[in-house]
Image (tube, rainbow, N blue to C red; front, side):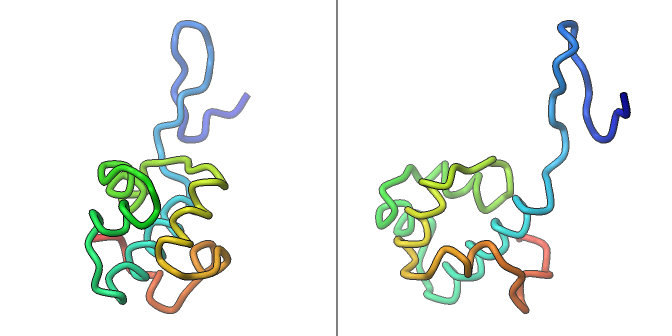
Length: 96
């Protein structure tokens, strides 16, 4: 079996060590949309009904986020879900 970006523990269960491209794209799009509206992570968390630490980790691409939370964040930002999941002109930049 190929070992591409994954380590194995004693039980031979893959442990993901790298962020996937979709996570990084979503992270960049959330950050871009939030900053375009000049709102803080705290306000977005409030609007989305999520914790500030969760929003922060989403924007760093650290969360394998559920479809339900994608919807909550999109609603909190007042954007359509596809906007957060598709390539945007400014999304090519790495998250700050």
